[in-house]
Image (tube, rainbow, N blue to C red):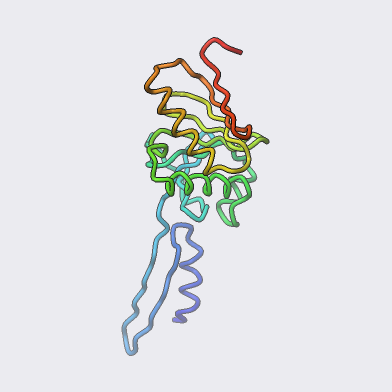
Length: 180
């Protein structure tokens, strides 16, 4: 038995992050495995777990609510790449955005249910209350801080806001129910 060959084969399993095979003569083999940990779900009609590095881990057959937003809007080619290659630009951007949400330490992580990456003008977020948030393609941390304040204000006033647009510098555009 060649430990390097066994290690290489183990690392082809998508759920395995690292593997190490230690051969101790005369008759002992130790296998150390570090599994990839599910980070969020990616949706394309079915749900698939994604680790923090952007590797697709497997299908989730049941409806579950992860602790971070679900990623949607990736093409079939982008999803296929997540199985074997590095994540594409949209998947990387979505993971970066989730990390920004987590770093902020705000309640936004629990308020954002989905990140839609299908648009050309940057991600569109959806809150658990169904509000659409156009974030834009840059300055996410600043815009997320602004979003936290806007959502808090909407919660206090009870305004029937259906969409928030943060794409413009130093400006927040709100759309209320019934407006086109």
